[in-house]
Image: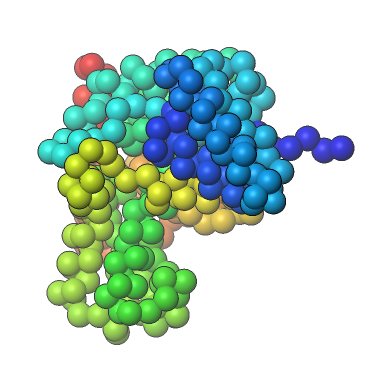
Length: 311
């Protein structure tokens, strides 16, 4: 009998617990939910496990405060860290979350040396560098979830503007996960029709701006936390492509080796995700304006990495 896939989610807060929920609802894997708060991951795991007879899915869900149960995970999702509060930027989290992500990755390295690792902790691109350095895994097995979420927000706003189904919106957001992200209107279409034929330049600019501030908009509305439904759903899209070897092309934070003119930098680019992780990085043809925006985003990420080295 073939073994079932195992996915460990480190951090059982809103993003982590919702991630476990989506994983189980899609029957993708047995799930281990890890958190330092005693009783919390155990309680959430038991609650989710008790939903499986109702949903008709066969998945084991375990909650723990340690890493023994995570041993041999196929994919590890790291959501650990403090979330943003109103008035905070993702960058404000850097010192605290560096310590948290470093300690988590040291444990993951011991317990699941063959896993693909997806970073969700903010500031995301910088935390990918922390994870990569501590894990020592091949570059294709360490990646960040950002582009899928930013693209989902962008597609949502485009569909709202046009009044069409979100399923017919095709587009992508590149760059760092923050205010310098780079939505690509020139590469966006609705049912194959270029976006610029349906939406004015002024409205496209408004959509691009709202996308860049999409996370802050939700933080401002919630007042006591940050987004979790869409981030968790975005993680699970990546996990599914890896576990099923689907080779989906999704924008992820990947460690570049000369692509787009950058080297040794994690930044959001189109990636083909399969059983080996990031199996291919696809280089889009960017016009001068798009390349300038991406350069600006890359500079912002490099600045964060330099800040990381000082804290």
